[in-house]
Amino acid sequence: MLISLGFAALAAVAVGIATTAVVRLQHLEAEEATRQLEAYKSEAATKISAADAKGQTAEAEAAKAQAQIEEARARQKEAELKLEQLRKQIAPRRLNREEFISDLSTQPKAPTEVMYLRDDPESFEFAQEIAFAMQEAGWEITSRRPIPPSMDPDAITAMSVGGQPSGVTVVTSSLGEGEITASFNAMVGRPWVKTAFTVLSNALQKSLGGIATSAGGPNSPAPGTLRVVVAPKKR
View (cartoon, rainbow, N blue to C red):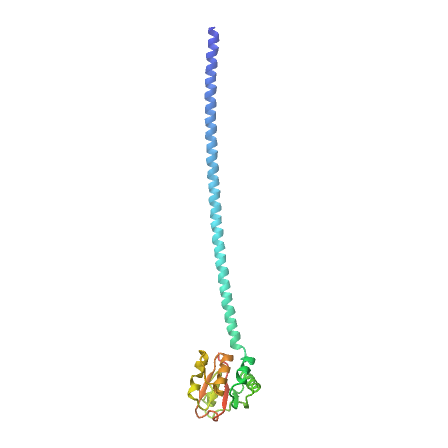
């Protein structure tokens, strides 16, 4: 019986040792699992941080690229605007022919001479266009000729016949009170006095966007007539 009790005691000790070993083993396994989990979490965090950094870098590069694209587009637009301005500057002048004729055809008329700068092909061609359109509108064109040479070598050629150094000028011998304010009234939509001078000036203004007018002076046309002076295009 004593022997049986001894075996039982040894068995109990063995069970205790085994249990302790199992518990220790489980503890070690738990520690290893925890270590591996922490290592995984650390590695994952590192990868996430790297991915975030790459993402931020990519976003910054994309934003930079977009800014460069926008800048290039702005430069292209500016270049296109400058090119269009240059084209307008060098393009020959043209009337809005149909509107010009319509504005003149049913209004007061006066005999008109058309003068242009000698040896300037663009002025010559535009003067012809104005004269032919006026004739089609029923106006009498008394002459189409170059501005004669001035006796004063220092004089500006177009000004010797009442014109301006550049652009188109409508010249008359004198202006009535209503004619003086007609251009402004027409521009702001008020009723305006319609004479041959004001009608022609308004029609050219609408077609060209800007002209000059002149009245009186030693070189003005005869009373009751008008003169259109075509000088070189404004630059």
